[in-house]
Length: 111
Picture (cartoon, rainbow, N blue to C red):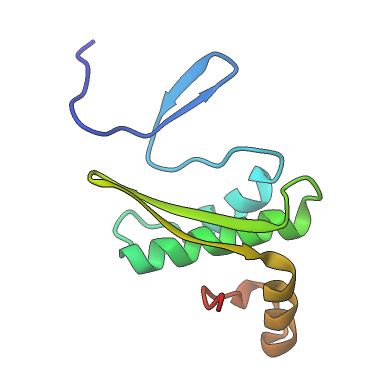
């Protein structure tokens, strides 16, 4: 098997290495995958991908007690990574819940 060139995304878990374009890990992954599976498209813009990442992490932290309650989001690029905040999910979730009346309308406006 030829070794691919360039950057790759791998999930290394329990001695298994899986290559792919999209992964969730941790105890809240089931909830995060629910959001990602419903809305992920290969051609998302950077902004759309960051919003989707935030909403998937928000779903995981809201539904899973062991997910920590914070969104730490990093955008990994060839030239390095960019941190996109460290945000407490509790006020974000409840603000959105009150404004929109449903969880599916969570947006990326975390300020």
